Every structure is written in C-alpha cells, then in structure tokens.
Length: 183
Image (cartoon, rainbow, N blue to C red):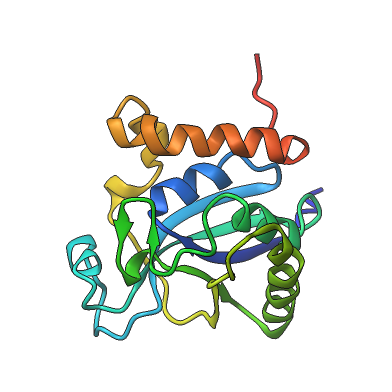
C-alpha cells in the first residue's frame, strides 16, 4: 500500500544546478526538475534566452516530495540556508534577474508558510532578505542536459568549486534531513 502524500514546491536561488543538487539529497524528495518560470516571454524559453535576462524568467527547480516525510516548511528552511537570500539578482558570480531568490507558491497555504519561514530565518542574516514570494505561473522544464547536472558532471570545475561546498554545508546543517546512501 502506497501512503505517499506527494506535493510540489518551486524555488529559485541562483543557478538551478546548485539547487537541484541540494534537493536530490533530501529525505522525502522524490524528484527534482530544473526549469524556468516567472517571466513574460511567449512560448517555451531556451536556456540561452533565459540567460539573456530578457525573458523575465528565473532559473528554478520544481521539487516533488512526500509530505509524510518532509514538510513544506522544512523544504523552505533548507532552501533559505543553501543560498544567499540577501543577494539581489545574484548568487556568487552569477548575476542577473534569472538568478533571483524566489519562492513560487502553488496555493495560499504555501504562500502563508513561505512568509512565516522568511520571518523565522531573517534574524540569522545581517542583511535584509530579498527573496520574492510569488504565485507560480507556467513552469517550463529546462533542456535535458540541465537535468541531474551535478550527478552527471561532478568533475566539472563549476561543480567542484561551487556545488560541492554547498552540499558539504547542507550535510552539516541538515544532517537529519539527508538521504542515507546504501553501502
């Protein structure tokens, strides 16, 4: 008997490769898809178009998770502590509105929880949090080569220099929320 209670969260915190890699390690997460949303350009955007900054879209991930194992609030706390929510339209060397910190809510309950989580984590930051809370529009799945990027490219320079340290931080801060690997 399958007692899964699958729900979906959509967040953007810089390059989607980083955010995807983080959530692929979290207990209860069933699937993570990199994509784009939040813009106003007609039709399905390409990576090149989103990177131009002209579409208005953000790089995001859509997370399918089992709410019986991990809560939406926990998903957001992990998200807020895995990137810099005080950096406006940038994460590290990635600069532009496509790299904004944003929580796209799917319903009013998610909107309310997002607001509470931002208030909860705000005292831990010296600067003001700039993370947007916006309704989810159309989600566009990114090109296939962006999916599972870290898993498929761990030796690539960006992965070892940027993503690996974020994963180390995740494993320390949220050890109780990490999937156990089979040995």
